[in-house]
Amino acid sequence: MIEIDYAQLKSDLGSGKKIAIIPHKNPDGDAMGSTQALNRFLKKLGHDSIVITPNEYPEFLKWLPEAEDVLVYDSQKEEAKTRINEADFIFTLDFNHFSRCGSLEAPLSKANATFVMIDHHQQPDTYAKYTYSDVEMCSTCEMVYHFIENMEGKDLIDAEIATCLYTGIMTDTGSFRYRSTTSTTHRVIASLIDAGADNTNIHESIYDTNTYSKLQLKGVALNNLKLLPEYKTAYITMSQKELDDHNFKKGDTEGFVNIGLSMQGYIFAIIFIENKQEGIIKMSFRSKGDFSVNEFARAHFNGGGHNNAAGGRSETSLDATIEEFLSILPQYKEALLNS
Image (cartoon, rainbow, N blue to C red; front, top):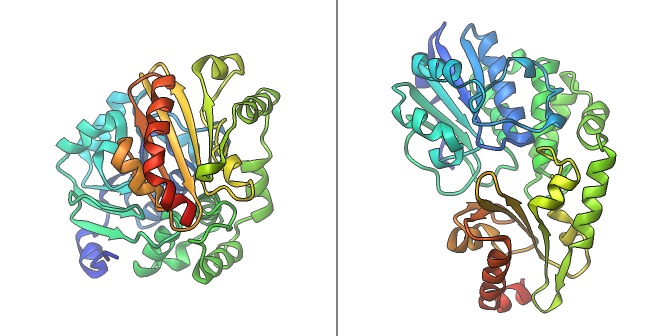
């Protein structure tokens, strides 16, 4: 773990600073929950703070408090650039390298602000003056909770901040079922409920938002599920046409990768999603036990993440990407069978 010198940070922050808070590209529940919670906390300290996302984020997260104030760089470039260029501090949350920011990479690389990183992914970069990195932590939202505690601001956690933090912890732990969920995580969750997070409403707002087309898309995913029992591996493919035919919206495939892991005896699951606009195949990797999808993604598919959850990408066709994956898999047969 890398910890922040909180006394020095509090001194440097002072009051009335201009602050930009940045999540990674294609932000998920943890990214949006952590940035929006921190944004509200910093505003309560008297700072001029704003969240700037690299691109659009899923509709099922737009009910979060103050979502209407979020700037989306891809569609609000000039305003976002101005806020970044004027920022005294830039907080980067739920990622640890500028390459995870898509089109925001260049503006961030040129910024003169003091950087603060809060993240739980492996191999953090060194761009930040203040780095809080803990790969054992279940979520960036739990880290933001501890950050607020260490900034002596726990009494400022209101229902809105609690709601954002609960959302990110819940989504990044698979509703508290992953191994990264600790007794401390549950104590944090209890504290957030005491502060006003409505756990039932949050669960319903995230998970009970299906549309007919989204359910039909899940049916396509199930139909495309391929099993490789000799490797304890399952994978799903989603072509651009299949997405288009079912009115795909950002976030509609959230959780589909876990379908393979839900079957007894399977420990490695992958989803390959074609994105013709970006010219890539986006991949999500999940595993159980000791098999590191972080190492797998870093070694072969320009990605990374956590031991049991990672992402990657390919710039070849969907068929070619699958062929490459299948050609690599035998190298890991022993590791998969023994995991």
